[in-house]
Image (cartoon, rainbow, N blue to C red; front, side, top):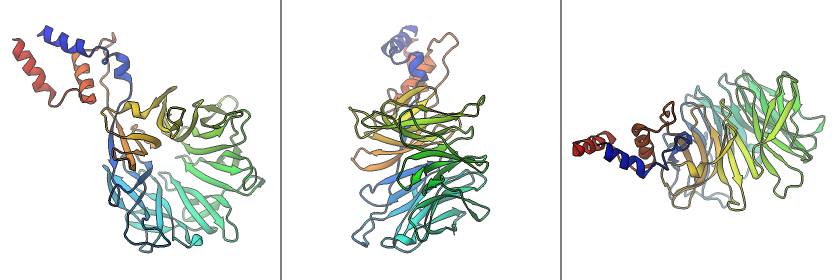
Amino acid sequence: MKLHVACLAGAFVSLATPEALAQPSYTLTPLASLGKNGAATTPQAINEAGRVVGKGLTASERCHYGLCSYQHAVVWSNGIPLDLHPFESLGVSGVNDINNVGQIVGGWDDIGRPDSGGAFVRQDGLVIILPSLGGWTGATAVNDVGQIVGWSAVAVEENRRAVLWQNGELIELGTYPDGMVSYAQDINEVGQIVGTGALVGTSGSRRATLWQGGAMINLGTLSGGSQSFGVAINKAGQIVGWADEDGAIFADRAAMWQQDPRTDEWTIVALSHDESRAHDINDFGQVVGETASVDFPQGRATLWDNGETFDLNELLARNTGWTLRRAWTINNAGQIAGQGWDAHGNANGFLLTPIARPPTDADADVDLGELLALLRDWGVLGVPLVPQVTSIFAEAE
């Protein structure tokens, strides 16, 4: 019996090191399309129950203004889509966030009527149109107490203003003294809001911005850079996004901002020296986004975790045929939703679910149970495992 086990373990000993067991690994669930022929899907957010929201093309046969496919708001449960388009009229819609009590926020626009766009919140099947400043409006995030953030434009202008919806009231968050544009991207459970504001006019240098306690805080950029963008904030107040870097040909760098508890100053750190963007962070500090390089100029979905950088394409438990390009969102369970090319070459959304790893022994030795669990996850062994092991023992006896 020991001979059989030793042979089995020896054949895969290089795979079953403690380092391999500790490395994250994921299963992939495709986020199905609303239409035929793999019409594109794009996830935007995921809640703690694993429900994913975003947008997808319907591949509708109706055509309007030369367009024959319509983008609709979508929620996915276990990869199955539900069309949440809020109106019967022709037009486009999308969902940007979902909280843990099921509130969903997003926006819509009637094709050919640029002044018709608006923001909405949906709960229990009821759609509520959010008040605006008079112009085009979008809702980007909602926390678990129902505070919603986004942007709205004044009717006579096209310039966006960061806004907060709270208890049915619209609150304008303001711009920098010489700036005319701002927009809010995310809000955490204590009401800290992160986004971006222009320092001068509408297209001048833009800065990642934090709104808290009635103040508008310029979070700065990387050394020598001129712009930065804040897109997500977690419960601890850690903020991620991207900033440009002086002297770089492709200047965007995934970045994280944290407040120094000793000085209350905000510091910025680049998460990558390659062209990259960070799109979300969970409460454990895990960050997801995308990284481009000479080898992969179109980008690869990326996870930054505990000081390490992972290409998510290399962490799939099985060969799926997918190329993962962008990771948009991550929840506290470590589930990641993003977009890539599926096995048929279509641009579609995916959901990654981490595979639990058995802990190694205190002496870091890998035993048979750990080896079998690893091989099962990688698809080397089929299921059920227990009868297979029993049959090996029976033969040895």
